[in-house]
Image (cartoon, rainbow, N blue to C red):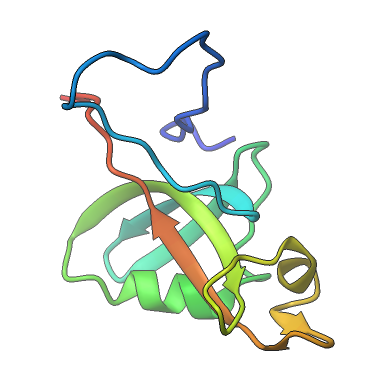
Length: 117
């Protein structure tokens, strides 16, 4: 695994936190992945340390165009169906959904409250 990448993973609890100031994320059916951007190049890394860059070149190319010198992102690689649902089956088949119509490959970056400085 890339040294910098530690995915924020869900934690099982008995009840949600109290109050109105907590955030949640939508559960997408995809691959959890880190994205490292440096000097116009992007690398996608699975939570198990596999390089996913060649498998999802359009995502890496889009991330490489971000207006940053260096960035580390945590997110989910997903294939979105026309109705907005994610499809793990379509993602496994390169974004092709046999009977569900055209899909869109996307990277859903998560917000982090962690201070890395």
